[in-house]
Image (cartoon, rainbow, N blue to C red):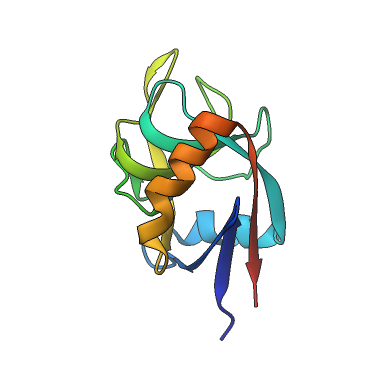
Length: 137
């Protein structure tokens, strides 16, 4: 079985797909892997970093969706009233945009490195965008 690894800024995290709770979102994201982008600090949601994806369509709707991801949870907002995005919570989050409260599909959970989440969030907050990648090893 392959292991999911998330590299964000200078940090590396082991992770798992939430296959049972979000099978369609996991399958759509797997099809896009390896996936690399940039994370920036959230504007409205609290303690999180996000990947703005504009009009990208992963072809999924809501499943296992939440407005309150816990630290280490990664959600995919499939688009609609705001742009498509991926958000990684590193602290308290109420997922929102300038349009108001949103919900995203919780499809990945970090399983190691949680002690570096706040460091990552503060690094992105104070220094700006950092690279992020998702890969199977």
